[in-house]
Image 1 (tube, one colour):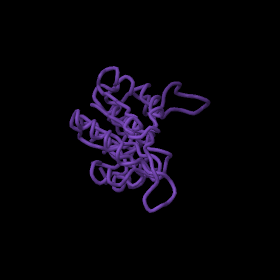
Image 2: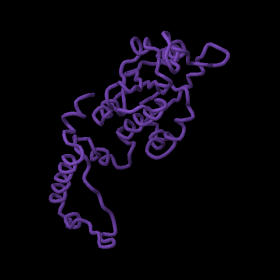
Image 3: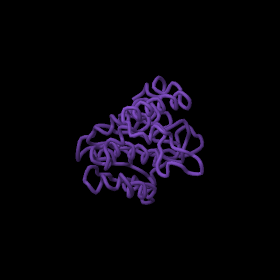
Image 4: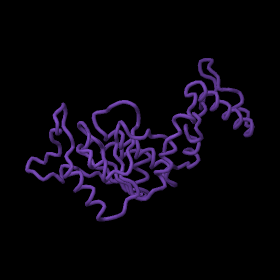
Length: 230
């Protein structure tokens, strides 16, 4: 898989992709992540990529030309399955969407910034808009990193224990059950006896019950509402 991220602040994406599962996936050649500096496609000596909005209003807007040039250059080199724009008004990112995206080969993510990008980019070049939640961040770099991380950990071979990803929260529209480790008794706080029983079938039933109970308590309607998009 190849993920190309277009950004005005490439330094914000250096650390997230150089550690843990993502780093190992890169080392195994399971994924290639390229950070494209939008300023490299600016057509002025100041390398500026933003301008005032027509009609006035506060804030600056990402200009159409550098974004167009960056996307067109990438598209001239390979075909892309999705060109994603991180946007507060996009479809809400969830585990089902992460699963879908993990099956693709080439993805572009345009990290939004300032007051957004010229609408014509969204109208003519973007194939999918994604939001990671109903709040506004300073830029789309953190959402791009979150989306990338969620996708990569699902690629076969990225995790040392591939079954771990299948038991994550949201995979079956359920939250994950509680987990415990040694010691079994700490300050009188004890691990549930069922987990110490060695009875696999009963343990799996307990975990399923716990997942359902936690979902109903903390995220009621998870499958009906949050899972409807993507």
